[in-house]
Image (cartoon, rainbow, N blue to C red; front, side):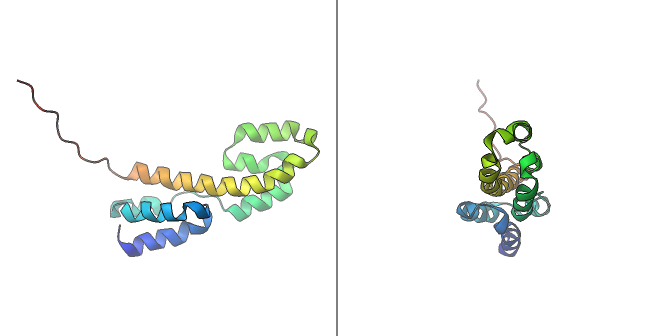
Length: 128
């Protein structure tokens, strides 16, 4: 991908992915073909700050987990979170913030894999 397009996408997503995977994201964007730009520019990501705020105020009901797509954990947290006396809610504040960033990276990587055409393979040799 052209460097300016790659940099634009990187700066768009750098705060939405884990810091330890930022270099990997940059490498993936640099190696992507230009035809992937429009697809990558419209990848749906969750704002980690919004997830953090929702986790603080509505996390006891499991809303944060539902938003991230962790339906099973959301239901468990909704039904059994009171058993932990609020400890699950408190720990989950930090876990969902990190989970939002990991989920964003996975969504970007999946969109990149889907938009990148497979490499051309040589036809199998003809047997005589």
